[in-house]
Figure 1 (tube, rainbow, N blue to C red):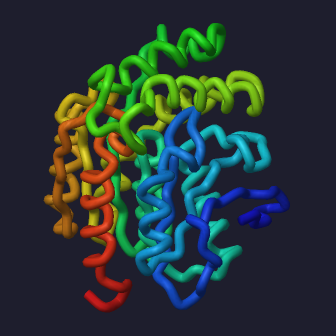
Figure 2 (figure 1 turned 120 degrees about the vertical axis):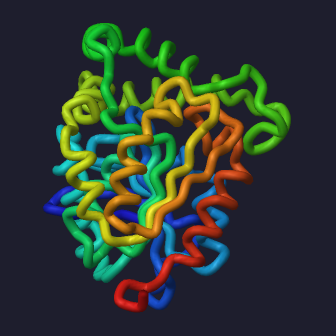
Length: 278
């Protein structure tokens, strides 16, 4: 589906179903140098089990027009504008890595539209080393290869995604290379710089009023589980309905553990209360 937001075209995968205003809405937000396809297995299931699905390409990524936005706050406001364009009053937002920061900031800035948020492979701060930032700017293909290796906890996840014989590392490598080829110059650096500069995580977490689920990979080298400790304490202190699900996976949760990720998301989504209904 193509939607006009601020005069720019935005692509959102709907899981093969027509958008139906009577259904609840879930938005899937990808991470750095990715697109909507990283949610392929989970988003399609939701679309065929009671939900409107909007698995978006962020601005400047693949099928969505650029330029890419340079801050997490701008991406959060863009997400609100997308929902407004579709006349969506409230939505559940699931974000992976950089997308998790977008989901968090969206819920803090636009509480009337945030029904619940699921933060996958998140961290605060989501610092990026100067060496990796420099590589993303000057040697993008090298940076892609490094991040792809660090994102997977195994060479051959079982049963694999979407089935035996699929090479997870190869699929992700090619996706990131394709995003680089189709996108504006230094897009990986733009995404990483936005993550690295985001300083509002704890303040924004304290403003969140909707239910929150953290989904972490026990073997995640990019955003290790301990990196969620401060933000989890902030949710708890704020009295937010909050829990954590740990999966036996690395950073690439959706492909290394597709069914477990889906179960953690779907259980959370179907039990998220409507806004104003407790």
